[in-house]
Length: 478
Ligand code: GLU
Image (cartoon, rainbow, N blue to C red; front, side):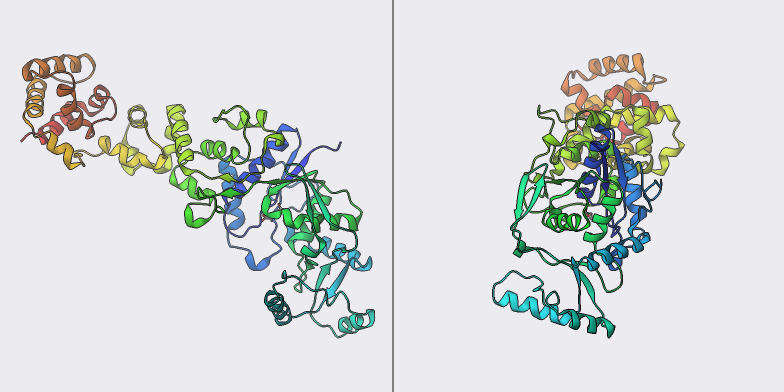
C-alpha cells in the first residue's frame, strides 16, 4: 500500500465555506490518523470566478481553525506548484495526449448553439446535455475547422457502449451512473485553461493522491474522473464523498438561513476549538454518544468507517452550546487572550490580574466571545445602571429599600467591603433591615450586579471597591 496522501482543493472564489472547512478537517484527520500527508491545492482554473484576496482568506481561516498542511502553496513540496494556474502546460500536454488517443475532440459549438440545444431538450422534456454533434464530425470537417482557426473547446468522450459507470465509494458503496446521464465534459476551454475535471484528475495523479475526500456534490462528476483515469492508464484513488450539510429544515445549507463563512464564526466570537469539534460531528460520530473532542482526540478517534451518508444538519444552537462549554473550561489566562479582539478599549487600562478576575466572574453562561464588552460594562463603566425596568421597580418596594438603606448605613464606617469585611457588613444589614435570605440578598444583587442572577456578589463587591458600591446602592434609593 502506498503511503496515504490526501488533499483539500478549494477554489479561491471567496471565503472558506463551513462545508469546505468540514472537507478540510476530514482530510486532515484522515491523514494524521493514517500517518500520511495532507496537501493543500488551489484550484483556480476558472479565472472568471477568481476573487481578490480569496487565497489569503482561505489560508487565514484554515490557520485559525488549526488545520495544517504538509505541502501546499505556502509550504511548497516536491510535487508543486500547488496552484493550478501555475501548471497550465501540464494540463495542455495531457489534453494533447487525449486528443491523439481520440479520447477527446474539439467542439466548435457556439454559446448560441448550445443554448438552442438546451432549450430544445427542455421543450422535449429530455435531460439537458451536449448532444455530441462535434464528436460526430468527420476527420476532414474537423481538420478544416481547425485549419480555419475557429474558436473551440476540447471535450472528453464518455463511452456509451460499456454499460453503466460504477463509482466504488468508500462511504456509500457502489453507485452507478448511466452513460446517457453523463456529459461529454469540456476539459479545455477556449481560453486555454483546463476545466476543474481535467485539472483535478491530472493533479491528483501527479501529486500521488491516494484518497479523494470531498463533498457529495462532486459524486456525479466522479464517473468522468474515473473515465479520465482510464484513458491515461492510471490507477484511480479511492473515493469518499462526505454527506451534504443541511439547514435545520433539511434543505441544503444556505447563506439565507445563517452564516456559512468560517470567518463569520470567528468574527462572531466562536472559538476555533468549538467550531472544529462541531464540524467534526457533521457526518462523523464516535459511536458512543460522546460529543466533546479536542483536535488531538479527534485525530485519535477519527475513522472513515464512522462517516455516514445521511445529510448532516448544521444546528447553530448546538454550536452555541459547545462554544459555551469551551469558554467555561478554558484556562482563564488563555480565555483572556482569545477575548483580546473583543475587549473594549477601557479594558486596556485594567491591571492584568484584576482583568482576569473580572473575566472569570462574567464568563459564566457566556456563549460568544463577543459578549464580553457588554458583560464587562458592569466593571468598566463608572456608574452602570439597571437595564430592565421591572427590576428597577422591584427595588422600589419597602423591604428592598430598607435593605439598601441599611447597606449604606453599615458601609459608612467601613474602609473596605472585601472578604471578611463584606460578611460582617451583610450581618449588620440583616440586623438593621430585619430581612434575610432572598429578601436580603436579591435587592443588593440587583443594585450591584444589575441582574437577579449574575456573578458572585462578594467577588463583584471586592472588584468594585467601597466607593463604587456605595454609589451604586445610593442610585437605587428613593
Ligand atoms: N475545487 C473544487 C471545490 O472547489 C474541489 C473539488 C474536489 O475536491 O475535487 O470544491
